[in-house]
Length: 264
Length: 326
Image 1 (tube, each protein chain N blue to C red):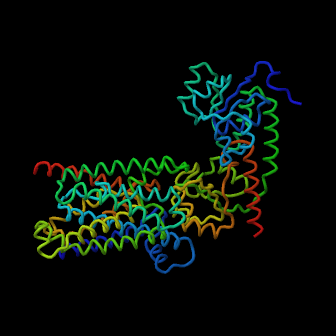
Image 2: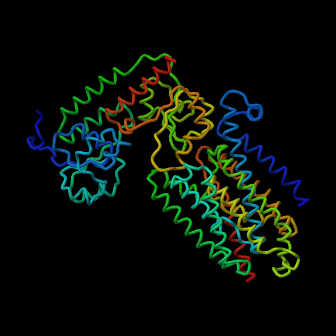
């Protein structure tokens, strides 16, 4: 039986997280009753791997006023959170920890430890890190022939090897065509360059509700033809969004896709 | 026109060829054209037939439409400032297109997209004619146009901001500035038939517009059916602008600049100016679309940025001249 936050000396007891990724790290590591509120994005199953868990917390919208009224003793924000909100909370005397997003797999243990330190849950963080490292090693296959894959999103954007999505597919045993196109960190990949690269797998974002011209490119006849030819056509989901241990599920899915491609 | 055709036709042909062989994928001219014509397996055929060919056809057709609509409106209203983009017709067409996309109408029934844009354009043209018909001055037309543009722009932004899709709001720029990036043959099939109907309505206006230069009464006595001419202008403009805007967004100033440059070369006659402006408009949009690919490849610089950079100074010049005459 785990001790509740009330039993612990000198740790924050009313923690509010206001960023999708810190929400999930906090939910993974917080002691029962320690975490008070998570952002509304954490409750949205389209982007959050922990939408069910988030239902057990109060929801905030990242606004200084509502967060102040929750009387938090610690606010955890992401580096993309609104600066004005963070500054306002600090002026009101609320301690705010701003955490950077994980830009690669190697940064995930660091983020877990950082969150553990902020919450006074270092032991839980170490356990999570050990588990993450062990599962990550188990997922790595010996791959001799890496299928060429493209990550392709709305507006023709691609993610390169130096991004979380890029590392997910690299770990799963794919070669990313963004590197061939000279986009190691990703960027705009013109449709014709993608077509000429002729990837064996196309990994694209799941369309949002409502229509947009930006996503229309994912329905372009050229993409459809590539999808028909390519053995692997995958949609990314919530496991890809944040640098949390949930990326292991994304890696596992991609590894299974690659194994299926090899079998064919 | 007889003097202009030997210049404009080869120019348009050359620009069409340029549009086909210039792109971010680094392929030789001969290889690309062979893949386009002969086809064959491999990604190059796909690139040529599904990316570059539709882009070239749309630039050609939309450019011709913009030039033609500009010349027709200016001839009918006898006002050199009448241009579909400036007076809100394109903006209203964009609003119609955005509404049909965001309500899901366009997803259920593909033709709903150009038809909704057409409906928006018809409403704008009718409103303009009611507010500033042939007897209204240049100033009334421009003021009415500004009001319609502002209203259509605001409503387009509102609809896109209300969309649950996080990308939609960023697309305000596309609808206001226009782009031909990543269009496909399906867009050509959506827009082209309606544009052809528009051309069929606008091109026969050559003779009536000539007659109208003498005034409405004189034109009527020469056997011109004024009611019919008005409807031809309204529906023809709405068809070409609506269909073009539905697939490429609002591209401004082409219908202003092109007739303005070509008018002295056809002896200021509105009839020959129609076909000359269609060719000139095609050349201008093809050139602008090649330029956006060469200036900032892979960044999707909007077409309307270039046409406005060329067109806005022209507009200022025209305003200045109109002011001095008044």
